[in-house]
Amino acid sequence: MKRKHMVKNPVKDFNQLVEKVDNMKKKDKMDLSSDQDLSVAIMNLVSIEEHFFFTGVKTGKTRYYILLKQVREIRKSLLKRIIKNYEGEVWCISKHLLAASMRLMEVGTKQLGMGNKKTARDLFTKSFDLYSLFWGLNMNLVGVDGVKKIGGKQLSKRDKGKQGVMGKMRDLIKKAIDCCLE
Image 1 (tube, rainbow, N blue to C red):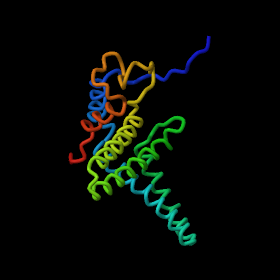
Image 2: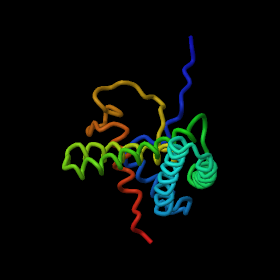
Image 3: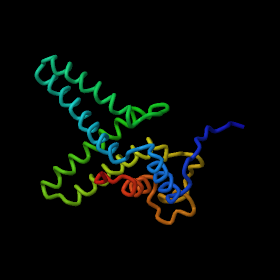
């Protein structure tokens, strides 16, 4: 009989998820408002790295690669403030979740400017879903213990909303992170 590697699911339902985040905030373990600002800054640093890369390639000037390296070091040091504990490739997954979220937001903004409101809304939703997954992953709110196909996007038999992991994370992050709190 083969043993399947199971990861403990740290949260059983949405209410427990919200309670866990509230407790983390109360214990001063995280300043989610500042961390949200920091995560957006990190998104922009990843974009700056990309621009230095493409500018270096297009111009053939190596000084852009030196600048890219300097920005990368800043980005890595700031990412360490949010991602304290990670396993496997969670560090890289987190960086790419932020980068993809930023790019989808930018493409959505361009679509909005061209009058494509429906496409823009779809891209914005996907952007926020990736951003929410970043937070869910780094707040240890995402687990895979007992995950199996039930039907549609249900997370359990009791899940009446059928919005899946992304929908649950989206709802949680909307409630947990308020960047306007001082």
